[in-house]
Image 1 (cartoon, protein in one colour):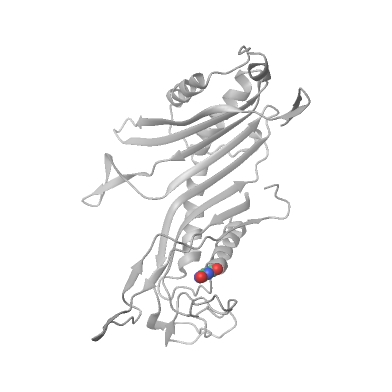
Image 2 (cartoon, rainbow, N blue to C red; image 1 turned 60 degrees about the vertical axis):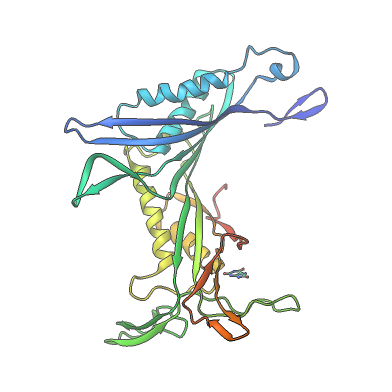
Length: 339
Ligand SMILES: O=c1[nH]c(=O)c2[nH]c(=O)[nH]c2[nH]1
């Protein structure tokens, strides 16, 4: 995107950040649907004269961009996914302005969830959930598309050893289901859930090896769809909304393992890889997954005074911490992916 000006390489873009909009839809039966979005827009356009020659005649004002968010939200007469709204906005900017060559639209959706009262979904009552659905749509004048969805703030924790579970299949020592083992009726086993062993030890190392610890993280995930042009995007209205739920489910199922026995995590790195791999294997239209998973530490509590030990840690009392935290991230892509 760089161009040559006055003997320099020059890159520029302009846009509007943090445009907040909520959109309400009402069905004939009186059921309400609401979304709240925080929109960011960034336009690549031929407006170099504004930088060099005090000529703003090619600038799309960022205030106009903001107004367009509300105008397009108004035009959406049916509920639509945050992905489809991002694509609609980006499409508008590249087609409406001859100067705009590429539009990037980022949106974060606030997790308003329908409330259940007396076991019944409320017609117009919502409460705020936790993790947020994100999207980035990059659309070029040619119609080329890059669509990346994501989740942020997905906080998960699994506790330590499950003791003596009745389990219908055989397990190897590490608590991993053994696909080769023949099925036996029921055994009582002891399943560890998370550990960290075998890392480099040197004169700076103090961390003990363990096969029992709390595993807590706040997942930030991005998954890139393989649709390369506007024309190949699925037409089903709520396709991406469903996909978001499905991807989250696969990430969580892989992190936690089956409800009764869980799954052993030898490191955050290993669990992250399993989660990314499961997502790529499960969804053929996703060709790249990036996961960031900070290792949020729960420190064992041992307290003594001169009279002796006040608290002796026995996998029971922890000091939860925010910082410092480990930072672990990776991207897994199909080999044909362009991410
Ligand atoms: O799962 C982990 N990965 C690490 O890289 C690491 N480093 C550390 O101190 N604890 C952990 N745990």
